Image (cartoon, rainbow, N blue to C red):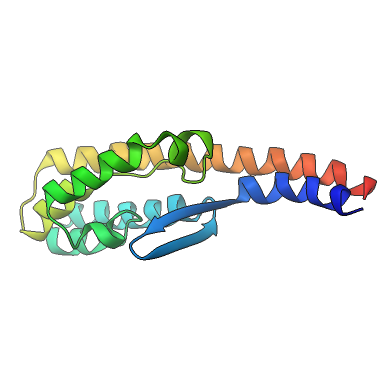
Amino acid sequence: MNRAIMEPRSHITWYMMGVGLWMLGWWFFFRPDPHVDDLVNVDAALKALRSRDPKSAAGHLQKVWMMGWGHRVGTEAFNLLWQRFYADPSWRGAWDHQQECVNVHADYVALARGVFSTDIEAHLASVRADLQTWIQEDLRAIAHHVEIGTRLLPAA
């Protein structure tokens, strides 16, 4: 009976939960949450940029998932950690615990210094498009595995 319950649960839980490694600990979340939160903050940053308010835009970018710690470090340290994070095949590939994340560090640093450019706005528009795609992929994966789990539950 435990196996009959565990199998559907593994399908549902595996694809609904993600794991982020923040400084000093693990962070578990509903899988689409970082993408949805990032989309809200990138949209707010774009709106601030259209109002020519780079400081407010930087404030919104500081709330983006990877900027939770990224706003505390310089560009060199951020890029080193970013490369190591994406280079680890067990973390990103085999286990698929952490979905794609956006890198807005350079945009944040420039905007926090009061620098505005159309390149930043164009990059954030591209990031926004990526986030929309990833949210759709998250929802498709969740729906697929909830369906599998739902089919398996009657056997329990």
